[in-house]
Image 1: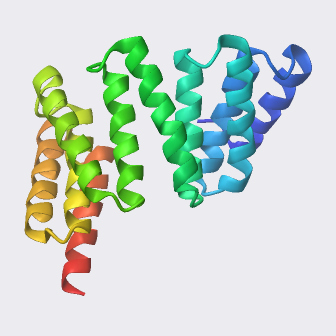
Image 2: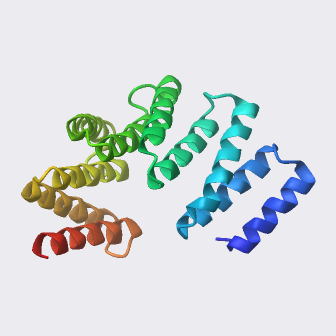
Length: 209
């Protein structure tokens, strides 16, 4: 993975050589935004994401998958910065766009619904978020299987929602099952397994603190 300095230099080079609106420039800008995001520097990442969304809309239109994916990343940033209403609005656009492109059961559609459910839960509508997650999990299981990564991610999100709702025993059991599946299919050292373990450890700490 290139360093921040390397990505910044690459963005500047492509802006100079190709222009701000070139697809390669926009892709590199999004790579830089993701690297900034990973370091928690959302204030710097957000303008880059906004520029990529605007650029891809101009190039491809609102309904192109690259535009929708950029909008989804921007929505995540808005949510992390506390603008949950803005994030939800963008995520609803992404769900509608993915559904039009790939159908109600497309993987990208289901991922978008999963993300939207998290924002709806953060806004306080736990019942609506739970209904979306349960329907999404059922579809993922049917199409992709019990141990699919997206299935397990959605189940982990449901576990978090159950915990938020005060259903601690069910939440803990579900997160244990998610962790066991990741261990069985990916091994103990996989990042997804380690993340699931960290979530379970955090749940235990909260339960007994």
